[in-house]
Image (cartoon, rainbow, N blue to C red; front, side):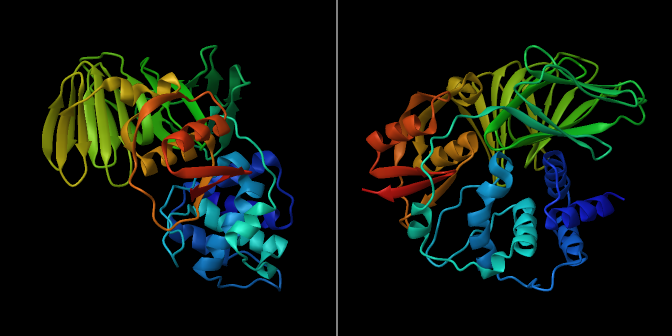
Length: 392
């Protein structure tokens, strides 16, 4: 039934008839589908006679470059990839590819020819970019999607006993009076690039989500456990409960706590946990590891536990960029997520520069880039939501 709804929305998109709310709903629903399901849906849609059924990956990548700003503005998530000569991006999300195909159908992008990237970007308007702001997409168990921004306070959604609020502290609160303990309803909160949010769980636990992150959790926890699922970066202040351990499931590991505060970064190839207060147990590859305050566990091919400056891990929630011998590529990835921009490199190779320092996350993008220019051999140029990166 959900697949049919997605199909209807895609067909409506081809006729340029989607409302803003429907477009956000379509994006969220596509993002939750496996790749193979997205392909089936696209293949089952009736398309104009001019549709080219098989588009080479290189052309998809190029077309995506040219439409992403116009189509989704701040909601697209594309990870920073190092450009290599003669290669194309492999890390494009399902939404982006599906959207690219849909636009190719509806707007006739098959006629576009790729020109020199530099020449193409030069025609785009110069514009500064604001920093991230409170913003989130909530996907309910029913499949409905709610967009929450900084302006909304109070009751956001109410239907069939389900209520979603945003309190004066900017925290999202979710309550469902119709559910039972045996069948709790789940929701997913996703922050796009250029957005962040806070939420208060049913047990009182506070969660702060960084840009391009998500958390899936039940509206109420069962009597014996509290489980949530995280991707991206999140800070937790867990409400103590000796009878119900709090467990965070992420890439590579499971974190188990009773009451504590910690920061978690969960990526495809690694998970990094920094303990601020209390004590946590990390379960990885069948083994248990325990952290003390001021320690960090990096779980990748192996588990490494080190003593760290916790302020560096908390910098994002305190609205600061703190670089401590950070690599140039790591810094640019953070900039991409916080400002919702895409880095475009003129040079195939990126210098392995290590930088240290602190910059406010509240400044406009141009101000941050000036700081980076002063400390590297690179020059930055803002073109809409792209940043051209070239060596002096």
